Image (cartoon, rainbow, N blue to C red; front, side, top):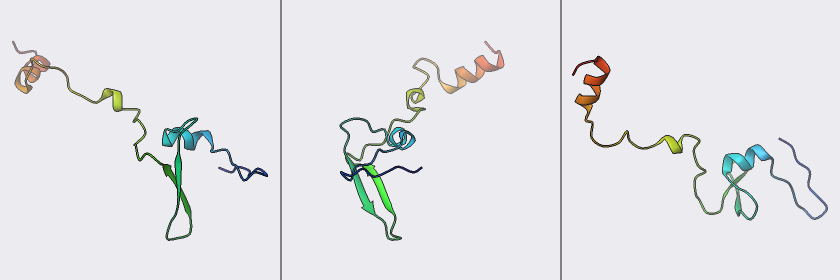
Length: 77
């Protein structure tokens, strides 16, 4: 992805990068120079962006243990 530097030294962070990092207006970012000379951008708050699977994380609920679930899937009573 390529972006252009303005006369003020500003750049627009491409949307796929903003989405990946979970940053938006008012977010702070850090720039780090890696050993190989490349520059890495990270969120300044070190929070991980929300996973698209995060809302699915959890458990099936209480009341059924593994044996009960297996019995239901096998059609046993």
